[in-house]
Length: 92
Image (cartoon, rainbow, N blue to C red):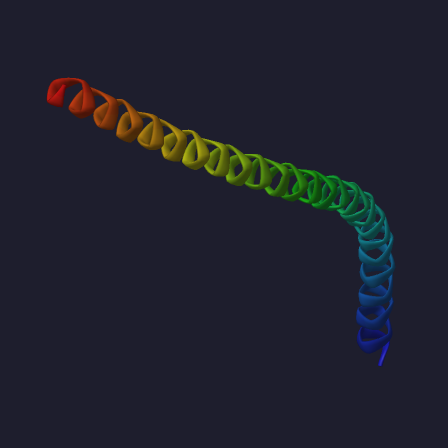
């Protein structure tokens, strides 16, 4: 019976020591989780900013493409007019 009591006391002491170590480990883990949460929040904000910048860049690219298309049409019209004038001058 005394052996059982001794073993139970040893296991009780061991579990108490382990519980104290576990509490500090949990606190350590919690601080790490809090740090990771702040990094995730920052990454989300950066992603939102990047998405906004990408949308702005796409809008500017579309505007530039439209301007280039207008310039190409005007250049083609000008070439056609010059060709017509050249042909008329050759016929005279």
